[in-house]
Image 1: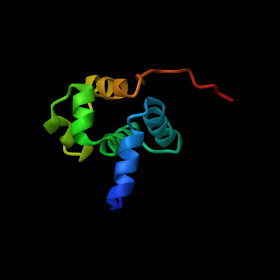
Image 2: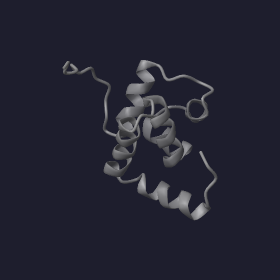
Image 3: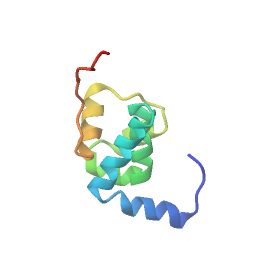
Image 4: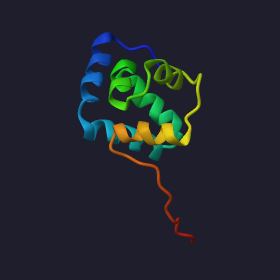
Length: 97
């Protein structure tokens, strides 16, 4: 993630308190081609590791490891992280041409 001014980072962190903004950040990242893992990492860093840890109930060390790619997302962790944004994992049928 590029370095940004503190005021911009604070602006984004403040926007991440809006559930619709946070949910759309994750969904738009995935729809634009990012992996779900990368979209969640972006959202975690944008929200703040401490704040995300509190919201998800995950230990701060685990959230930091996930955000910095030192730990991989398991299914249960994905569900828990997505739940912070009002999202869930699912499978859908893809239309075949």
